[in-house]
Picture 1 (cartoon, rainbow, N blue to C red):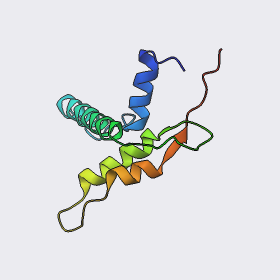
Picture 2: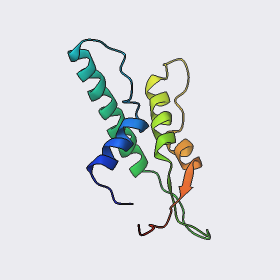
Picture 3: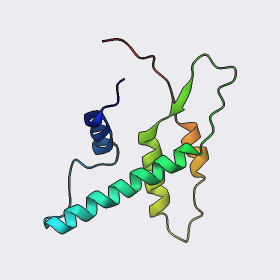
Length: 104
């Protein structure tokens, strides 16, 4: 897949939930956009530290980024009363095989 600017924005839009806004004022909408971009960057940083062992497997695997964003959102929303989840282990459990690039 070719990663051009439209594809990147589409992935950002649907992965972190920039399809609907909760605010009405322009300043609040901008704040929501920045909050979601921070969430995306946090999830990207966490997933870059997740190690997936590729040994003895038929395919190469990658992190399911949509699940990683949901796990990071749950981590950021967790309260002090409950123990924080093991983010890397949860992300490591949700992996996808890397699809070969098809000419097209």
